[in-house]
Image (cartoon, rainbow, N blue to C red; front, side, top):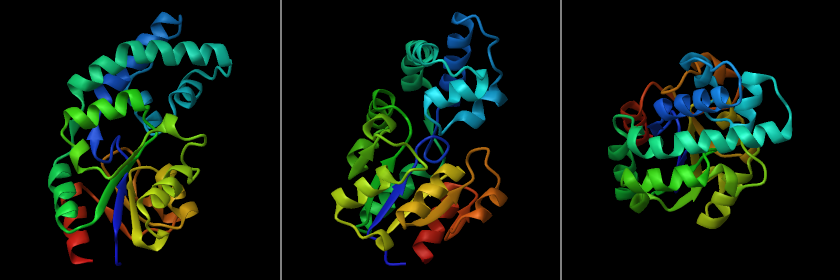
Length: 217
């Protein structure tokens, strides 16, 4: 591969915000008179839009209720995310190595911008980013390729010159539909076998191994 850009999902790819996400779901559900979900029930919703996660766990498709969930979730979770979100081991080293090699770096995430942008700033990732696209900055979320296509356009990169790295099949499908290369990162709950249905260049157990693979590619 002759890469000019490597783009990343955020949650369960570069960073882990599980504690605050679970707290947000549990707080919102309790306030809404619903049984709060457990940690392992919430984790599969990470990577989806909040409204979709609410429907997945509650079965409630009422628009007003979904709006109320998002408001309550944000009230509880966003302040916590700044305090509790951590990077996975090797994240900073990988991003710095890519920038040092002259490769553009970006994030294409389903996370809302009000959470994502402050987190990137606090974790000192903002100066390393050439492009950031949050979930509320597109009209169609992943697996739609809108975010990736916008990244390619704004970076001036052809699709065959870009690699997207993510932890879910949503990320894999978005890459497939955008026509970019794809590498799965097994920091989340999606097993390696789930990616067999999609074209991929590599499956990395962690970011340190992904860095080694990129250096050898």
